[in-house]
Length: 494
Image (cartoon, rainbow, N blue to C red; front, side, top):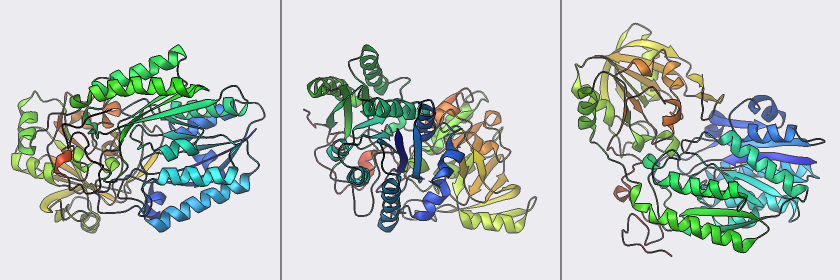
């Protein structure tokens, strides 16, 4: 059995001012051929999960092709997307004959010219291997699943968790489904139901709240044997495109009608819970006052509007301004901002020196304003660290050269490049311990909760501007299909 393994993964945010180019993929993940086997087998990723299944199969040969992943941003630069896709397809061609293909995807990728870039990837790979070869893809929970994606793939398998702690298991499930399809033991039949709604992610978790109910229903259908897979997709809500929607995908063994019925059953419950996804948003100064009014235990200041994994730029200073207005206070606060120029000035000054820098507002000046920050240089780092997990366990991250500046108890990590903030290793790699801080700024709407579990006493979601704002009505929409909830509260479905 010969299986080609590859994929291109990116999550588009059309409100971000900066597109992903080749350097964006090089900074996050760009692996070819045997590099995939050598560097990713011991990580908590989809490809590692898939490889663990394939390695247990007798006479199964994996042909690694191309794996590319970039941090969320504006749609991928067209020439970069085409270059990566052409290489992926060429490598799949070179791997033939193959019995199957497993693709690691996100599902919310756009390029500058292709709003359904994931569908384009699937279509090109399908054309390369022909209609008779099974093609199974993995998806993020926030995929924008389209009819084209479903048509070109044999099956699409999405995460069941938010925070995303089942990447490895999703890869395993997709690999098992691919193997069983190749061997003729199952015939996946899928149905897609799309819902006219966009949901902010702060309250979208599998552990509690409205999303958990729908996910648990899907899992119960799988346990009963009614479904091979039930995918619940709240969608990446910052995609201003004419074909965006939350969705449900139900996959049965050879029964399209049953798949449609189960998908509708799940979709009705999902739709009925649409009004329960909002979170309390607290103005920045009030958020800091509330944190300081509590006993001196760690409070997370969730700056989700500037989440780099949601497509914002990471250079907001809104929370930092509120912290500066609150000094002096007992204890320490950890904050972060992307600003390459400020990093360079801190490096020039050197450890132990006091430096005044203007930080923030350089990447998205139409949204964020810089501020002056005077502090002593506590730490200089190359910005490389590895996630401990559970999400993305073992995955290296590179925030570029990084400096820690300290002023009045505020420890500010200034980095050259935005990275995922799911894991406290970001701060720990700089000698900062979140569990010992009074307040910790995290630029992530929800995914940080898994790795930060047990470290904090409360999470306060800050009402702030940014490309990933949960205040969806505040964003300059132009292309959305209307009506759509919550922008149009009276939206009806079905």
